[in-house]
Length: 66
Image (cartoon, rainbow, N blue to C red; front, side, top):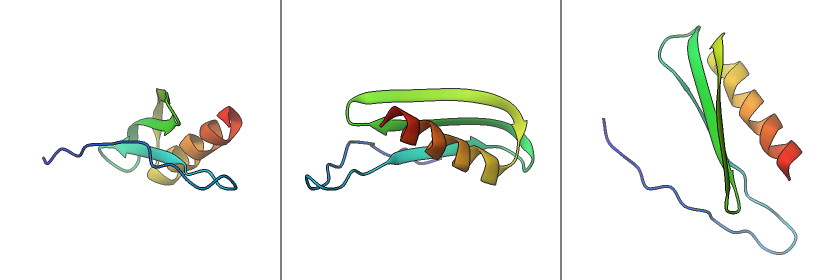
C-alpha cells in the first residue's frame, strides 16, 4: 500500500482548510478517523460503523475544534 506525506495547507485570512480522513476495512466495519487543524492533530476509533458515518464524524469533530 503506498504511503502519503500529509502536511497543513494554509488558506487565506478569510478561509480555513479542513484536513480529515476516515479509515474502514469493510463497509460496515471497524472504523477510525483523524484530522489536522493547523498544528493540532486528532484521531479516534468509533467501533463498527459505515464509511459515510466516519467521514461525517471526522468533519463534525474538526468543526467543533475550530
